[in-house]
Image (cartoon, rainbow, N blue to C red; front, side, top):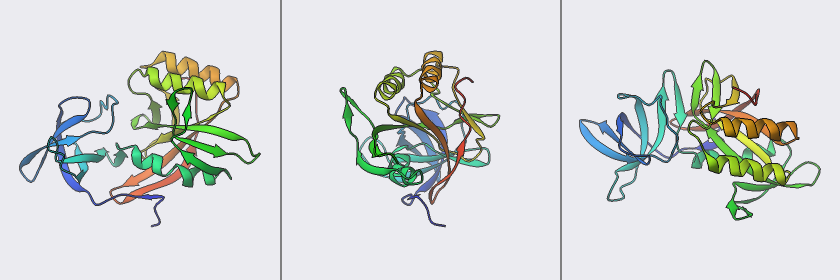
Length: 220
């Protein structure tokens, strides 16, 4: 299979507990590990015994970086840096041109600057969704003032917003009810014409493939 983003070699572990927002305890081969978690969401579906894949990378404080976690029958990508790396491939599917990564806008750093089919330059932001219930993926899974600021910036500057659903079992997308302020802002922005898409990725220990666009609803 040709992956839009191939992943580095990873190792197996089992989740034990979340030590804090950025560190988890896990076990592999009878040895307990401390792993960096590059995801600040609540991730309430992570339970003791959940299979993980991690990239071995000793930092003195941790022995690696969590890449994937398995929820039921599917893998979910917890390191959104790999989804961000796949943004250039994704925007080309819409006939857009990738210009640069990490542009600044009003003091905020966004994920990309692109040129659409009409030649307009747009600031682009991607938000990663790893929480799915009854086929509905949602973002954010914890209140996020930063996400709301980004949304307001994009709406004010004719930007573009991509919700990357980083697991294969989602059929639709909606904002998580845990952050009603974001949900309300998203509804208003969509009604005002903000360009937004929800795109599902199929992930495996080997890599990521952009799979399909999902229906996007502004209310849960």
